[in-house]
Length: 286
Image 1 (cartoon, one colour):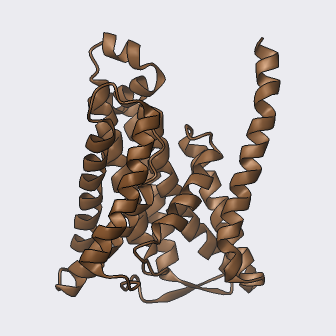
Image 2: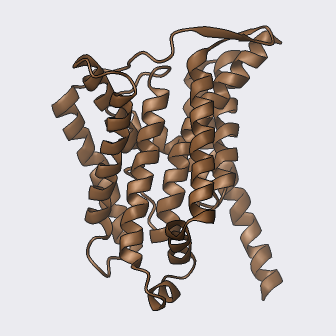
């Protein structure tokens, strides 16, 4: 029973990181209709930046905040590259983000090398109903809960959030009422970058990050996001938690070698299920 609780809590912690990356994908897709394949690079860049800043004796907290801010800035640059030119189609922007993700490999190797990096998180462990768990997993869960609450308040209670929602729901109508849809699109890239950066900062103390670690992160985040059809943050959070727990159970009871396969299998199952539902929905609405 204690082993099950340990795998459950660690899975929820890692799942929160997947959900943050997936939410970044959702925010960008809802506003711009672009699937951002560079989303995993935000996490890697932020994690590598924290390791460098801590090595330069920048205190914890400030180092993490600077890294998340840098990831948001990188998100803005990716947004300017992908959708900065008016009239760029989502398909063209998707290819641009894929190219940026590959280009990021060269930049990361040039700056940080090809060796995995990590940095210390919360050092202690706690006992939860008889299960020993690293305190850092509880920090990931608490920080993610606060971020998702803040995002819910942003989109429900602020004019900026309502402008983002309007741009996602009907770009033409949003332009009619004076909303700068392009600016909202760039803002969505900034938010997506910051969410991806936060995920990298939170998860790196418990999982080392390499220059090509963005592949696993973006696949896991995408698997979580498609559970909500790339448009529903709450479903993305649920998908991330399910994926994280499933991977932790597989790693604990079987082998860590199958963790990535769990994400791919979940993504395939959801895609097949959604593809099967769509004809039924179309027939009902016809």
